[in-house]
Amino acid sequence: MVEVIDQAEKLALLGHNEISIEEGTEAEAKLYSQIETYANSEATLLKSLKETRYNLYVIAASLRKKYLNAKTGKYSEEFYDWYRRRNLNGFFGTHPNFTKYAAAGDLVNFVATKSKTPETDLEKLPSTLATLYELSLVKTELLNSKHERIFWQLFVSTPKRKFQTDKSIKLDKIPLIRNETVIRENGENEIRISTTEKDIKDWRTAWNNPAKSSSSRRADEEITVPVATIYAHKTLYDFNSRTGDHEGEVGLDDLTNLLQKLQSAFTAQNANVFRIKTEMVEIEERYKKRESGADPARKLFDKKKRKKKK
Image (cartoon, rainbow, N blue to C red; front, side, top):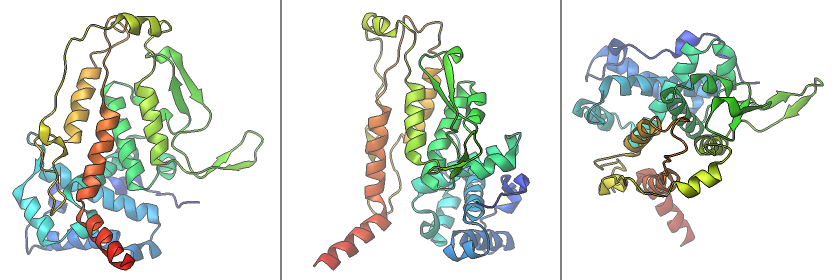
């Protein structure tokens, strides 16, 4: 069993004075030393893998909170300079990938500080970056749509709905967020694979795209008048071919935030006259493919692989 993180307060976001990146200061040296320790695979010999990863995620979230400009969606020049000087690509990858670490850290912090049973929920929470990032998107969407209780329900069951109303929610006995071991009703252990990125993504897709009512098929046939088309800036998929950083005027987070605001306007009260159709699944797949292709580490790996074949 994964070691339980017994003190949730350890996963609180760091204060601004604890994450100084000013060159030559004791605070910056200590911060870099922490990142280096938690990112080093040998650190897992001293602490559990999960706790080590969680600490790294929380540090990333703390840095983003201090150095990201909420209006422009970009980090300060001071942060970019420090990131290059300390070669943090070796720990976090490119800046877009660092953002995923930060999102994972925000999620871990949220569970640690807001859950009624933090130690139990932290033990169930996955540790892989991809899964936590996907779960962070779920958390943001549920909170924005005032469904926070559904987020906490994920730790004890798998909520499912056929229609866009809370009354139609069905609770599967197997939690979406789970450990490797699930206890059956007869007391026996049933070994199951821990929650994966695909589990979260499949649930998120199903949850966000249920039928609007029992007569939704007929309603959809009648709701056919196009009202508006939303276009994103053409640089959405632009990544720096050298550093792998996203350089577009608009990013995936911008699209997600915009759609969340739009979806809040589509309620059970107007479901019979309006509907929203998005292409986010296809956009996310293409975006992540471009992001992966621009990653310098990926290019280096592919180059070495081609040399071996020769």
